[in-house]
Amino acid sequence: VMSSYWPFGLTGCLSVGQPLPETVALVEDIVVEYITDLVHKAENVASKRGKLLTEDFLYLIRKDMRKLHRSTELLSMNEELKQARKAFDVNEETLVVTNE
Image (cartoon, rainbow, N blue to C red; front, side, top):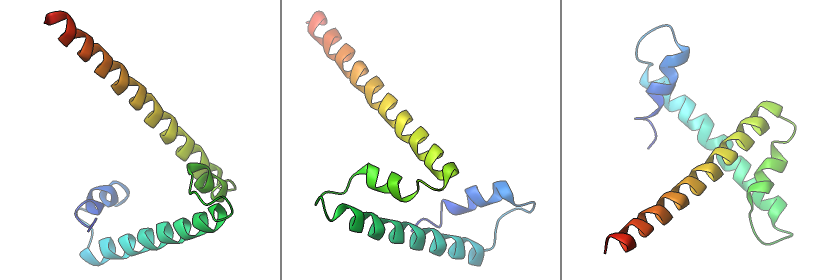
């Protein structure tokens, strides 16, 4: 499924052109297995509460500072984008109302 995206990410760390299809398939399998395992662990953490939250994932990666920092950075950027879209939508609605 994701194989069409992987070669672009892999070429950044390789000194040769296109990676072998076997390499792409292996990396994809590893990533899918890691994410699946992480989701199952997060579900176990969240089972007491009954609701899966972002904090459950952050809890699981808390000892890996690199992943934790990058995750919180991406979550922060996501929140900033949401706020920017919301402000843009409000401004757009205001323009429609004033132009009528």
